[in-house]
Length: 380
Image (cartoon, rainbow, N blue to C red; front, side):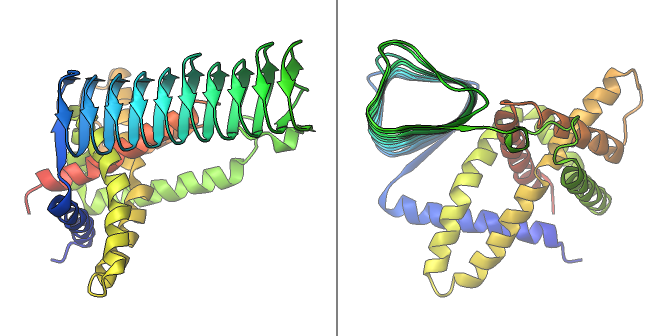
């Protein structure tokens, strides 16, 4: 019997392998999956590095891009390309010639970035010796800027503290904005907030300052207990529940394998999902360029969107099972009951202010990687 789900996954994997082969022909790529990884300052990797692990410390040189998923990443060396990282703690102490895209609970920067920093997390701390030559875009609970930003500062955060230098404009939405005495904004300051910014004596803004009072109905962070966005969120949750039930009934073995991948290979699933989510769009673009690859690219794009939509399901099944077992249930809970409970729990956690983005990306990466990993482990 034709397995549509297996076919879609196979197309996605084929498309990614296809672009990897193209890249390999001119520029090598190294893949590593380890518990702990130390890269000494004497070592050099002459190509891109994809790595997943518990704790990663890089003191050497990576001449291409670094893509990583880990519990913690300390980058103390030199990256000639860009850095894309999903971690609990991300510390950038060295130099990155390209851009940095970080998804972490805590992001600390005390190095030199020659392009942009895009940060999703709870806490983002730009230390005094940090230098970001272009734009800083942050979505976080608290952003402390003590270093230098050569471009614009943009984003949304709970609290913004500036004691460093922003060479261009600051355009943000925040609950609290504080300019310390050493703060210098050489462009405009435009911000949305409930209260006017606290500007300490000595702080300077060269351009105009525009404060837009944030009204109650304009608050960005959702709160399911107030009824804000309640109806569409419930409808989306119910639709995902129905989808999860149908997929679990039809592909029970695959659903079990995906849940097991989350349970037994969490970091590897997280890393695999992170890598595939970044590389698959590249593969699809390459396929669209070729005439013969267009049909495969269209199918791969559809499969990619489907996998993103259902990525919560294996993580939800794992979470729900843990909760049910924690309540004292001795026998193995059903996949469907675990999945339904898990989806509710994850939805609640995704409404925690300033933690929703880190949680969302962890769930997305892990679920995506677990689905692909389960297909690799499930026999035909």
